[in-house]
Length: 168
Ligand SMILES: NC(=O)c1ccc[n+]([C@@H]2O[C@H](COP(=O)([O-])OP(=O)(O)OC[C@H]3O[C@@H](n4cnc5c(N)ncnc54)[C@H](OP(=O)(O)O)[C@@H]3O)[C@@H](O)[C@H]2O)c1
Image (tube, rainbow, N blue to C red):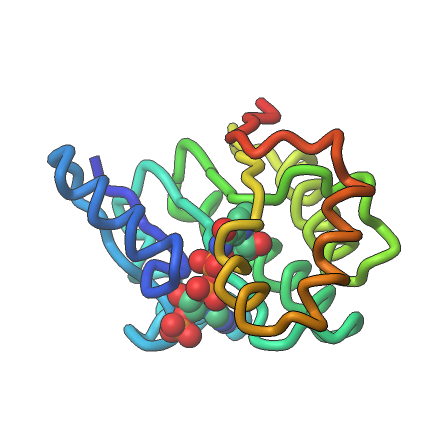
């Protein structure tokens, strides 16, 4: 099966591509580094030709409120539109556990917008929610002052479960 991983050069995307290839799929790693840009549309039509599944593991270069919202809205709209035109049968996206409870953050408002666009599209989808905690452990250990802040955030988020949580 041809599976295009948008953001396939990133932390998660590179692992997804490896795992899919191990399982015998034709996994294509697509990102600006390989000439595929979900914001401008560059290279998208060509990359998605013949694809059955799109996996969206892109991330915004900026987490500033307006910039991150523009990124996830534009990128998601483009991926869904180009995906529909290419006959993609399933759209998979990675989101974050607790997104709907963290809307004071511009980043999580943008992830919520991404989820809502996917849910409203005509393409069958799966949204996977994972925690982001473990990638921050080294930073927490390196910066004791910040560690206090993160520890407080984690205490107030004690209902979160560090597990993969499929929404659908
Ligand atoms: N990391 C986690 O533990 C975790 C947990 C839960 C959810 N998530 C979600 O998973 C997604 C990926 O996270 P990550 O940590 O793997 O991010 P990352 O390492 O920062 O990777 C981001 C990827 O997005 C690509 N990208 C950036 N701009 C793009 C564009 N205009 N068009 C196409 N691709 C573009 C980058 O490509 P280049 O390398 O070419 O710039 C890179 O491949 C995010 O949406 C995040 O919210 C991550």
